[in-house]
Image (cartoon, rainbow, N blue to C red; front, side, top):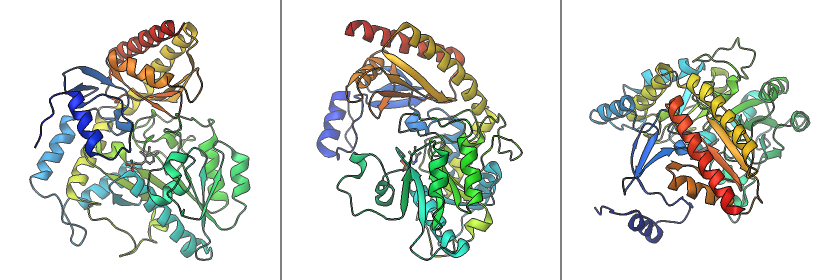
Length: 426
Ligand SMILES: *Cc1c(COP(=O)(O)O)cnc(C)c1O
């Protein structure tokens, strides 16, 4: 095995031998701990992306790594042809944690979304009585749900979609945060479900109106369709609630009595459910929905494997024991205040938006300009790693284990970098 000695060498190897399906910032990382990452030259960075919110618990959390290595030395994979002694305990744990009857374990986020779509369609035909092959699912402009053929069929992103047809049928796309459009689309009797991100992360942290998710839940119930919440990026503490659909609830578990809780019929989780150490995803639903899944109708060789179960339980325990949801909520307020102060000092940033520690700043320049990219390069030089999303927007999503002091230091770095960049432009 070749060991790379410089960032330049590592990047050249990827360029030559790997498919060019990403455009990464030129940072080659070789170590992570908590909120920090180090590159191969030993330079230390604050991580402000957290692997798209997979690493909410911080890099290489000792409890999660311990759970993984202990389990890996005992049993890693049996397939579901047999039972394993971690799956039952994990399924009990995760369903009680989020308050659903049943879980269907998978590996990646896109697979979990595909699973939800299959469950929803089958429920539509077998329980709602929609004629076979006529079921439709409502989705939203600027959505991001993954990269499989079915999912990109209803993407708004031309890079993700173009030349990957023919596309999967049966999706109706409407504008986000638009109650009237949703109710209108629900007039179609063949609609079986609504698939939605409670905050659109990839689209640049689009936060809908305060009551929108509650309205989605109510309308889904009224028209007898399944409300499917894709919480792969927003869930598990990130937005200052256990789930983004929890609204303003500060409790560390589900609590249906809360007025702000927009309970989905199908909850889709991924990313932080493993703390970023192993691919784990999950679809949760109650018996009335999950009962459509019978032997042979769905599965995955690695789904529900014992390492995944051990890792996910430890990762969810860390969220609860370290009160990371509350921390995200409190630090989020400080972060947005600091960014609003910056906006007053500098015309280059026009807006900060977000919830908890899922935030973004909007750069005041043409969407196709490279300003946000160049600011991210400058942030890297100053020891902080973040990445632009869709044009001139920079998402800021540090691990939730950050301290207040560290957050202020990071805000100082962001402020210094952006003020410096803006002087340079004048
Ligand atoms: C990341 C993400 C996915 C896809 O997850 P993968 O593990 O990359 O397949 C789906 N939905 C949302 C909202 C995401 O952020």
